[in-house]
Length: 235
Image (cartoon, rainbow, N blue to C red; front, side):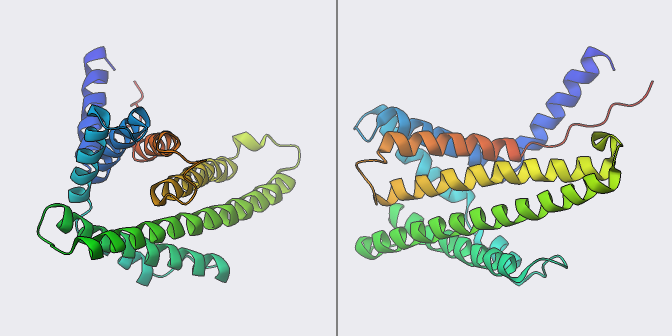
């Protein structure tokens, strides 16, 4: 491929990436928590960016709760242990509730919903739901990583003296294990962010700590949404 073809392909991937509402939301999330890290809860330009970006992100999440409602009623893959099924469904229910209640918070901040006290209460409940969904995600990822590890060890025994990294099935399992490990790290960071937003441990998890963890987890989300590069054609 010529340099022009490479540039065209990379630009096409960028356009594909930015066309995703989820990707734009996560980019805004990185800006939001990066600003929170810089402001450390102090008034100023960074805090204004934090607040305005937080409000703007809520538009991207309108009716997004339907996605997790669909996941809640969708069948699970065969062979999934019951505890992981229950944790996965709990995550869907909690995340859907968070996204639904978050819309009421948005209506309050735009002035459409007038009951500010109830909106603040619903906003706090929604954050607890998000924290709960992150805990469920953490447990699910731990369980799935354990299942993959056991499956990979069994495959290693079957391969015996063969090079396991040359085995397509082993490489696919290793890739899934790495992806789940990254999702586990993100879920753990999101728990810290939720604790910070709820101010459950204000002395230890300050706005700067919340912003730092939120910024890193946002970058992980942006990475997870990257489209796969096209395979180069053989000359």
